[in-house]
Image (tube, rainbow, N blue to C red; front, side, top):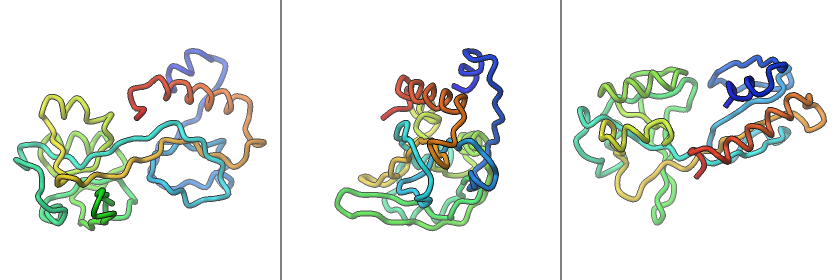
Length: 190
Protein backbone atom coordinates (compact mmCIF):
# COMPACT_ATOMS: atom_id res chain seq x y z
CA UNK A 1 0.00 0.00 0.00
CA UNK A 2 2.85 2.38 0.83
CA UNK A 3 4.57 1.63 -2.50
CA UNK A 4 1.31 2.31 -4.33
CA UNK A 5 0.89 5.58 -2.43
CA UNK A 6 4.40 6.68 -3.41
CA UNK A 7 3.76 5.79 -7.06
CA UNK A 8 0.48 7.75 -6.96
CA UNK A 9 2.02 10.77 -5.17
CA UNK A 10 5.68 10.90 -6.30
CA UNK A 11 6.32 14.35 -4.75
CA UNK A 12 5.66 13.13 -1.19
CA UNK A 13 8.58 11.75 0.81
CA UNK A 14 8.07 8.97 3.34
CA UNK A 15 10.34 8.06 6.24
CA UNK A 16 9.24 4.66 7.55
CA UNK A 17 10.56 2.87 10.63
CA UNK A 18 9.39 -0.68 11.18
CA UNK A 19 9.45 -1.75 14.81
CA UNK A 20 7.51 -3.63 17.45
CA UNK A 21 8.60 -1.28 20.21
CA UNK A 22 6.17 1.21 21.65
CA UNK A 23 6.84 4.63 20.15
CA UNK A 24 6.17 8.00 21.73
CA UNK A 25 4.68 10.03 18.87
CA UNK A 26 5.29 13.39 20.53
CA UNK A 27 8.81 12.83 21.90
CA UNK A 28 9.99 11.16 18.70
CA UNK A 29 8.29 13.81 16.54
CA UNK A 30 6.45 11.27 14.41
CA UNK A 31 3.47 12.24 12.27
CA UNK A 32 1.69 8.99 13.05
CA UNK A 33 2.12 5.29 13.73
CA UNK A 34 0.47 2.39 11.93
CA UNK A 35 -0.27 -0.26 14.53
CA UNK A 36 -1.68 -3.74 14.77
CA UNK A 37 -2.50 -4.67 18.33
CA UNK A 38 -5.21 -5.92 20.61
CA UNK A 39 -7.92 -3.62 21.89
CA UNK A 40 -8.20 -1.71 24.23
CA UNK A 41 -5.52 0.88 23.62
CA UNK A 42 -3.70 2.18 26.67
CA UNK A 43 -2.67 5.68 25.50
CA UNK A 44 -5.87 7.69 25.80
CA UNK A 45 -4.26 11.02 24.79
CA UNK A 46 -3.65 9.66 21.27
CA UNK A 47 -6.20 9.91 18.43
CA UNK A 48 -6.81 6.61 16.63
CA UNK A 49 -8.56 5.64 13.43
CA UNK A 50 -9.29 1.94 12.94
CA UNK A 51 -8.85 0.55 9.44
CA UNK A 52 -9.93 -3.04 10.05
CA UNK A 53 -9.71 -6.06 12.33
CA UNK A 54 -7.00 -8.68 11.88
CA UNK A 55 -7.64 -12.30 12.83
CA UNK A 56 -4.62 -14.11 14.28
CA UNK A 57 -4.22 -17.87 14.67
CA UNK A 58 -2.08 -20.18 16.76
CA UNK A 59 -0.37 -22.22 14.04
CA UNK A 60 2.21 -24.97 13.61
CA UNK A 61 3.62 -27.10 10.86
CA UNK A 62 2.17 -30.62 10.62
CA UNK A 63 5.85 -31.70 10.85
CA UNK A 64 5.83 -30.51 14.48
CA UNK A 65 2.25 -31.13 15.60
CA UNK A 66 -0.05 -33.67 13.96
CA UNK A 67 -3.42 -32.44 15.32
CA UNK A 68 -4.93 -29.51 17.23
CA UNK A 69 -4.32 -29.27 20.96
CA UNK A 70 -6.90 -30.69 23.34
CA UNK A 71 -6.03 -28.09 26.03
CA UNK A 72 -4.37 -24.67 26.02
CA UNK A 73 -1.76 -25.88 28.53
CA UNK A 74 -0.19 -28.01 25.76
CA UNK A 75 1.32 -24.77 24.42
CA UNK A 76 3.85 -24.89 27.26
CA UNK A 77 5.28 -28.19 25.96
CA UNK A 78 6.34 -26.83 22.55
CA UNK A 79 8.91 -24.31 21.32
CA UNK A 80 7.31 -20.89 20.84
CA UNK A 81 8.19 -18.31 18.17
CA UNK A 82 7.14 -14.77 19.03
CA UNK A 83 7.52 -11.07 18.28
CA UNK A 84 10.01 -8.97 20.19
CA UNK A 85 9.13 -7.10 23.37
CA UNK A 86 5.81 -8.80 23.82
CA UNK A 87 4.53 -10.05 27.11
CA UNK A 88 5.26 -13.77 27.01
CA UNK A 89 1.65 -14.88 27.11
CA UNK A 90 -1.18 -15.18 24.62
CA UNK A 91 -4.84 -14.38 25.32
CA UNK A 92 -7.42 -16.90 24.17
CA UNK A 93 -11.20 -16.44 24.19
CA UNK A 94 -13.95 -19.01 24.40
CA UNK A 95 -17.64 -18.24 24.04
CA UNK A 96 -18.51 -20.11 27.24
CA UNK A 97 -15.19 -20.17 29.16
CA UNK A 98 -14.29 -16.48 28.75
CA UNK A 99 -10.68 -15.26 28.43
CA UNK A 100 -7.60 -17.19 29.50
CA UNK A 101 -3.94 -16.10 29.18
CA UNK A 102 -1.35 -18.79 28.55
CA UNK A 103 2.26 -18.02 29.50
CA UNK A 104 5.20 -19.49 27.58
CA UNK A 105 8.99 -19.36 27.28
CA UNK A 106 9.98 -18.37 23.72
CA UNK A 107 12.52 -20.28 21.65
CA UNK A 108 12.75 -17.46 19.08
CA UNK A 109 12.03 -13.77 19.66
CA UNK A 110 12.22 -11.45 16.65
CA UNK A 111 10.75 -8.22 15.34
CA UNK A 112 10.78 -9.86 11.90
CA UNK A 113 7.38 -11.50 11.43
CA UNK A 114 8.59 -13.16 8.23
CA UNK A 115 11.36 -14.96 10.16
CA UNK A 116 8.76 -16.22 12.62
CA UNK A 117 6.51 -17.32 9.74
CA UNK A 118 9.31 -19.16 7.91
CA UNK A 119 10.45 -20.80 11.16
CA UNK A 120 6.91 -22.05 11.84
CA UNK A 121 6.77 -23.48 8.29
CA UNK A 122 10.03 -25.36 8.95
CA UNK A 123 8.58 -26.91 12.12
CA UNK A 124 10.85 -24.98 14.50
CA UNK A 125 7.97 -24.01 16.79
CA UNK A 126 4.42 -22.73 17.21
CA UNK A 127 3.42 -19.10 16.61
CA UNK A 128 0.52 -16.67 16.65
CA UNK A 129 0.41 -15.12 13.18
CA UNK A 130 -2.07 -12.95 11.25
CA UNK A 131 -4.52 -14.77 9.01
CA UNK A 132 -3.57 -12.72 5.96
CA UNK A 133 0.04 -13.97 6.27
CA UNK A 134 -0.79 -17.66 6.78
CA UNK A 135 -3.95 -18.01 4.64
CA UNK A 136 -2.17 -19.69 1.72
CA UNK A 137 -0.20 -21.99 4.04
CA UNK A 138 -3.41 -23.06 5.81
CA UNK A 139 -5.13 -23.77 2.48
CA UNK A 140 -2.14 -25.80 1.25
CA UNK A 141 -1.83 -27.56 4.66
CA UNK A 142 1.76 -26.37 5.24
CA UNK A 143 0.48 -24.88 8.51
CA UNK A 144 -2.50 -25.80 10.65
CA UNK A 145 -4.48 -24.01 13.34
CA UNK A 146 -3.70 -25.82 16.60
CA UNK A 147 -5.91 -24.00 19.13
CA UNK A 148 -8.20 -26.35 21.04
CA UNK A 149 -11.75 -26.45 19.75
CA UNK A 150 -13.72 -23.32 20.67
CA UNK A 151 -10.64 -21.29 21.69
CA UNK A 152 -9.39 -18.45 19.52
CA UNK A 153 -7.04 -15.46 19.62
CA UNK A 154 -9.04 -12.20 19.92
CA UNK A 155 -8.99 -10.05 16.80
CA UNK A 156 -6.42 -7.26 16.64
CA UNK A 157 -7.10 -3.70 15.48
CA UNK A 158 -5.24 -2.38 12.44
CA UNK A 159 -5.19 1.36 13.04
CA UNK A 160 -3.32 4.61 12.79
CA UNK A 161 -2.45 6.69 15.86
CA UNK A 162 -1.47 10.36 15.95
CA UNK A 163 -1.14 13.02 18.62
CA UNK A 164 -3.93 15.34 17.39
CA UNK A 165 -5.93 16.08 14.27
CA UNK A 166 -4.50 19.60 14.15
CA UNK A 167 -0.89 18.41 14.13
CA UNK A 168 -1.14 16.34 10.95
CA UNK A 169 0.62 17.63 7.86
CA UNK A 170 -1.56 17.62 4.69
CA UNK A 171 0.61 14.83 3.24
CA UNK A 172 0.07 12.72 6.38
CA UNK A 173 -3.70 13.26 6.16
CA UNK A 174 -3.56 12.26 2.49
CA UNK A 175 -1.70 9.05 3.33
CA UNK A 176 -4.13 8.15 6.13
CA UNK A 177 -7.11 8.69 3.81
CA UNK A 178 -5.37 6.63 1.10
CA UNK A 179 -4.72 3.78 3.55
CA UNK A 180 -8.31 3.91 4.79
CA UNK A 181 -9.56 3.26 1.24
CA UNK A 182 -6.93 0.58 0.54
CA UNK A 183 -7.62 -1.34 3.74
CA UNK A 184 -11.36 -1.28 2.95
CA UNK A 185 -10.59 -2.78 -0.49
CA UNK A 186 -8.07 -5.32 0.84
CA UNK A 187 -8.46 -8.98 1.70
CA UNK A 188 -7.39 -8.20 5.28
CA UNK A 189 -10.76 -6.73 6.26
CA UNK A 190 -12.91 -9.02 8.41
